Length: 89
Length: 345
Picture: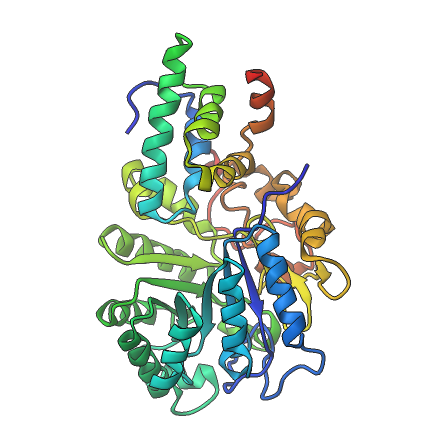
């Protein structure tokens, strides 16, 4: 599923965040968010996907209808959605 | 910090029920509560649930089909944009009622079935002959084309029947089986002997995992047994966890809450610590500001073994059972079977 290294704690939190989703919806969401996170990591020449990549992916690549849900789920698992947003400004 | 919107909210529309289940969390009887929300109040509440950002509402009870305006409430819920489902004992679903459920826009049903045979089901449900009525209700639902899931309750000495129920559910075309662990609240408080032992829970979880791993279509979920997710993570390869398993508990106060027929808001139907009253405050205000919800959302406030557990954000212990036994929202769950070492990720 992953094509480059991830911060393992971040990966665990992403898995925890999406685990209540029905499997079909989850697979689509995961594919989108993994690809986008890895692309953002490569864009900034990082060899590892970090929190900022995941949050940026969730904020820009998640379909609009489910974006807030995804961000809320990540926040529930301790991912710093707001802090990362500030960092991106 | 503003809390995320609830994903799902259950609204127990009435206390009235045609059965006398020994484990009934809402202490349902054969009459409505004298202070039940009237039609206008119930519609207003449903609108508030939508405004709070919830996506899904579960209309349950009591037996929701005992409430004369239930179809009107269901229609209102759909027009408010909520995915609208119903929890029912199934006994009142004739072909006519099934057609009305379709017309009112009910999108799925959860039907309780607590035994693989009439004897086990009827004894637990308190009325002879209801097993047959429930089965007929299921058949009527199936013929009407309403998606449905079967919801058995696990209890001591009888938990193994859930496998036979799940087999039947698949044959009937159910989309899911949602298993409830017995929690001694409401009328269930009078029957603590039904609560499974730790060993039985452990055995159930292992059987549940094996069944889900072997299953490609049916989804299994369980309520009030959050340790199952720890067992899933420890024993199932990651790819399978991501593609097959659904973490279904505990969302009390974080993604879910329950509102009783007279307006009391609880974190969960089986975690009955009052968080507010919709006749006194708006649901959004209660959801955002209730101290009960604040405590449940902060898993770093958990105590003892639960507080030290690396899985506290996905398990957190069965808060309902802890509260029923200790009156605390944060005490450790002494029914957890994992050692401290096993609770390190």
